[in-house]
Image 1: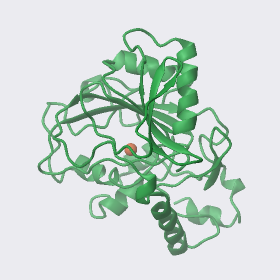
Image 2 (image 1 turned 60 degrees about the vertical axis):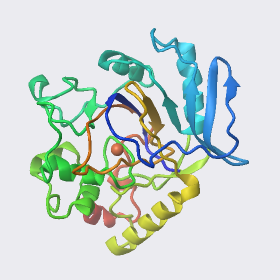
Image 3 (image 1 turned 90 degrees about the vertical axis):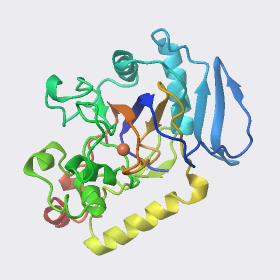
Length: 303
Ligand SMILES: [Fe+2]
């Protein structure tokens, strides 16, 4: 559905969440396809496209051979979202596998030292709901409010206007991000229409998107949300359920958006760890302000 220049791997080492309606909704022919050594179960399929697939047949007990990585990247290009069950990867092997997918991993800008990070790894983002001492995130804490933005459709990029979506989801707490937060995730400009790895045109959309060059803020938001609504019609969306520790989802932000369940007072522990592979394409970091049309928008949109 969408674009961004970063591929992402997520990993759940522990899943205590109760099952809800958020199951993996398989649509189309419920068939498994043998693809080399893999077993591929597509999630959404139409005559001319596929979106999402559960992949079996990968031996995660050993380092993944380069040839297998290339085959998996081909599957990523085709399906955008790949789901693997029970990988058994630990932090080191999660990182090692992610590094096979691209030259550089994004360093978590919110990593403030081993003693302050539950995962103790700057290459992993702790996208759990668990605090350093093992307790669940406290209701109405700043981290709680930050999570509300994750329940909006978004993509992951090295730079985007993250704080716009935080403000949308939690206007009181994130009406004004702190100076430190702004410096850690500054805004950037991205092309709305981009090209997927297989040459198809895609839209780069997210709740982070604040303004379109050449349009007013109001017109921009209207168009952005019309496009998001179009791309998130039920026939284009599926939910993935974490079934057991070690389940992993790999998604290509150049081709899809994602969102998470918001924190609730009844939630149980959700231990999810994300590695982010920086895309090596020319649009990975967005475009320069000079490339905006018209140029006079530069000042207005850089806030
Ligand atoms: Fe996310």
